[in-house]
Length: 290
Image 1 (cartoon, rainbow, N blue to C red):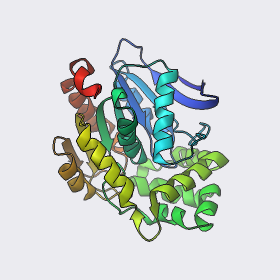
Image 2 (image 1 turned 30 degrees about the vertical axis):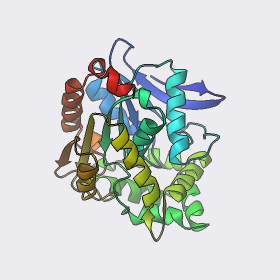
Image 3 (image 1 turned 135 degrees about the vertical axis):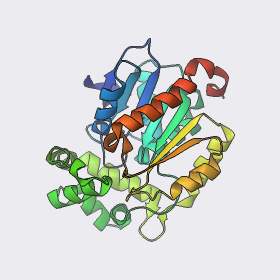
C-alpha cells in the first residue's frame, strides 16, 4: 500500500507491507530517487517483514523538510515518520547510496531506533562519485541541471545505475522523468549534493568522518553490500567500509551495478534475510538502546 501521511505538518509518501507482529525493515532510497527502488524487495520479502519505504523528505512526492536537504534533515525526517507511525521499538534499516548515509545519520541522531544497518552501495566511504553528481555541485549550473526535466539525462542516469543496461527500461526512464518534473525533488537533490560535496573535491571528508565516529561509538550489526560494477560509487569504497566497520559482514557482488536490490533481487533478498535472521531485534535490546 502506498499512501501519503501527515508528518509534523507536511505530507510524506510511504509504501508499507506487513503488520506489526513482524520485524520491521525500513528501506531508504538514494539521491534523485524514490521508494519505487524497493519494489522488487517488497515482492521478495513480503510476508516475512513489516516493510516500510518512504520517499525521503523533498524527494519523489514527499514534501521537503523545514530544516533543509542535508543529511541531518533527511535523517530527522525518517525519525519523524517512524514517530508518526507510532514505531517505538528499534528497527532494521537498509539504505542504498544516499540512503546508506541517511541510515548512519539516523543511528547518530536516534540510536534507539536502529537495531541493524544494511548499507547497499552506500555514500560515505570515499570522496569519489560519478561526474554526473559532481555537476550538481556547480553553482547555478548544478541547480539548472537538477531542476530541468530532460529525457536524455534520465536515460543516462538509468543506464549509469545498472551493469545490465536492460534494467534501464522505458518504465524506469518514464518514472525518472516524472520525478524530474517535481520541482521540490530537483531542488532537494541539488541542495543535498551541494551540502555533501563539491565539483572539485568530491564527497566532503568532514561529514564522512563524523559518521565514522558515530559508527565506532554506537556499533550495530552491519551488512555492507556492493556491486562490483558500480559506476556511481566505486566498489573500492568497500575496502574503506571494511576498515572502518571491522565487525561488518561484507559482500562484493559480481556483475552488478549501483542497485543490487533491483539487478540481483534474489541474491540481495537471500543475503539480507540471512543477516537479519542472525541478528533479530529481540536479541538486541541493549545494543539498540545505546
